[in-house]
Structures are given as C-alpha cells and as structure tokens.
Length: 211
Image (cartoon, rainbow, N blue to C red):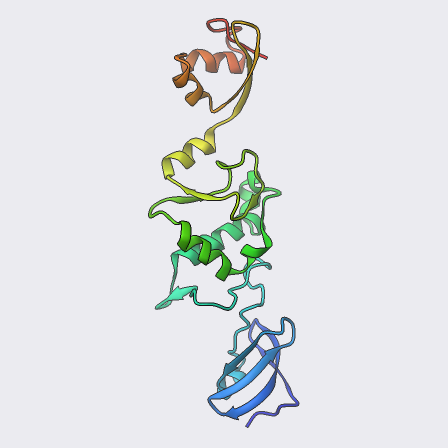
C-alpha cells in the first residue's frame, strides 16, 4: 500500500501525491504543478510512470490534455498529433533558427491543448492538404481556429514564394501587387518584363514602373 502522506516523483511529469488508495490497481493521484487528477496502478506510481496530461511537455507550452484524442495509435503518432507538434516546433522550437520567417509567430492559448486542436483538425482536415496560417490573413503571426485552414501543397508553395510589390500603372496610379505571377496572368502581362521592372533591370514595361 502507498503512503498517502508521501510525495512521489514521476519521470518528466513532476511530483504527485496519493489522494486515495482503493487497491493496487486503483490509486487516485494528483499532480502538484497542474492539479491534474487521475487513477493509476500503485506500481506505476512507485516507478514514476504516471503521466500528467496537463503538463506542457511539448516545446514548453503544449500538453496532451484530457479527452478522447490519442497522441499515438499502436505507438505510431497520429496525424493530428504530428501536425500539432510540428506547429508548436515552428513557433517555439529550434525551427526559428533555421527559418527566421517564423520569428514572432505564436500559437493561440487554446491550441496549446492537443485535445482542442485535434477536434478542430478532425472537423477541417482535407486529406493530403497542409496547415496554413497566411492565406486567410496576410501577414498573420498566429495559429488559431479563425486564421488557419488546410490548403493544397501547390497553393502553399505559391504562397511561400510570393512577394509584395508596388508599381505605378500606365495611367500613373499606384498599384499594390501581391504574387507577381498571379497578377501578370490576370492582367495579360509578361512576367519576365514585370519582374525586370521590379528588380530595376528595366525602367518600365508597357507603361508599368516600380513605385
């Protein structure tokens, strides 16, 4: 029988105390850091194997949470979990050192809970598509239910290389252009000519100039 007055230490999940000892297979414990309460086996408590589902173990902010969505199935990470973890790593992990464009990007507080993200994922995921935070809101810096959607690899690739330009048109009006390729196609303009104008190689093309 476990000592209800003793504080037990789990592996990577902090300290916990025994609230109730029913039998060796049913021991109610509470984690001191988060207040998470669960039932476990006495042997697991002694060995420090009980897990705190509210402890931020992913990039210091993400936690699995309490609910019906599993992080893994037969020891293989689930698609929602892989997507969620990758998102957190882009914002709070080492990815920012390799990709400075993610500097300052964050994840909304509710999505720190994997259960909440997994529910949104299951409601919105399209097979083969990728999570995107930029297409809905230009210059967006936060992953959230209102700013994210799933897009095709093609659309995501186009978005990744697209840039913003400011031109003056043949009438002398200022025109802001985002994604020069798409703009040229829609306005029957030669992409090479407009690209040379944007880089200063040409002074103008069909009356278009860089502003």
